[in-house]
Length: 81
Image (cartoon, rainbow, N blue to C red; front, side, top):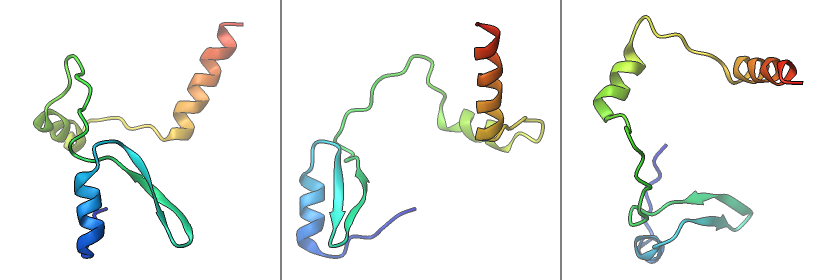
């Protein structure tokens, strides 16, 4: 989700940020801000945007819910004991 910052002072503060940090509003924590200036770690064999889109739209792709993944990890953990 995108949020447009219309307040010039807030926009300037965020544009000047060089580190990841927490964003607070009057009622508390709103979220985490990662400025574009923060260097992304280089990941070997990182998929391209095109490859990710191809995988996302592949009609034969098999997707698992977080619950299914966690259940499988618990199974694997039990096997190692």
